[in-house]
Length: 88
Image (cartoon, rainbow, N blue to C red; front, side, top):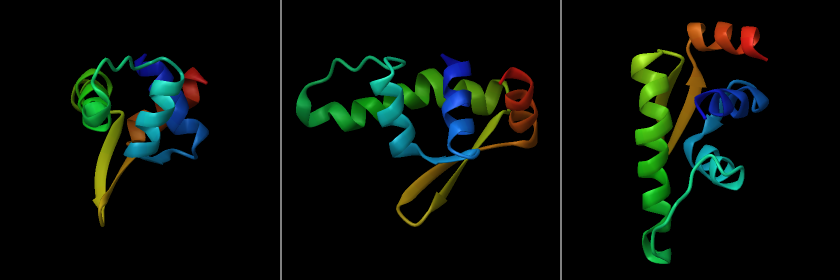
C-alpha cells in the first residue's frame, strides 16, 4: 500500500493535494472506510494519515506535508524521489 501511494504521487508529478490523494487511495481500494456518511471525509483523512502518510513521512522519510492556504500538499523528499525512480 505504501508503494501504491508513492506511485500515485509520482503519477501527479511528485506533488499532490492531500484531499485528492485520499480520494484516489479510496478509489483504488488502498483505503477502506467504514464510517457513516457524515463522518466519511474525516475518517478517510484519519485513515490515510495513520496507515500511509505517517509511515512514509516519519519511518521512511519519503514524503513531506506542506500547508498552503487551506490545503495540505504531499510531495516527495529527495529520498522519496530517488525511491520512486528506482521503484517505477
